[in-house]
Length: 79
View 1 (cartoon, rainbow, N blue to C red):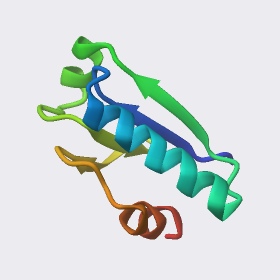
View 2 (spheres, rainbow, N blue to C red; view 1 turned 30 degrees about the horizontal axis):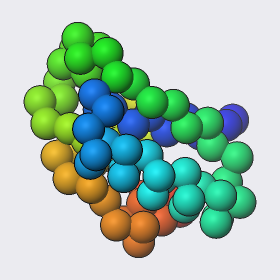
View 3 (cartoon, rainbow, N blue to C red; view 1 turned 90 degrees about the vertical axis):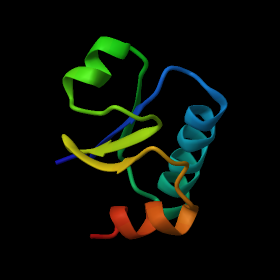
């Protein structure tokens, strides 16, 4: 089954940086994950996320409130 990674954020610089890092790591690892940007504030709040950026992997919130390092994202994707 294909992994689904969602970047939750309203489009601020930190959210864009997070999206860029996640996409780079996915490409680097040769992972065929689907990367989706969620910008709808109501949907973000409905998921219980109060600080952005956030990274959700297969429906589970993994990172909240900071731009992850490439290493942090790699560790999450290699589990």
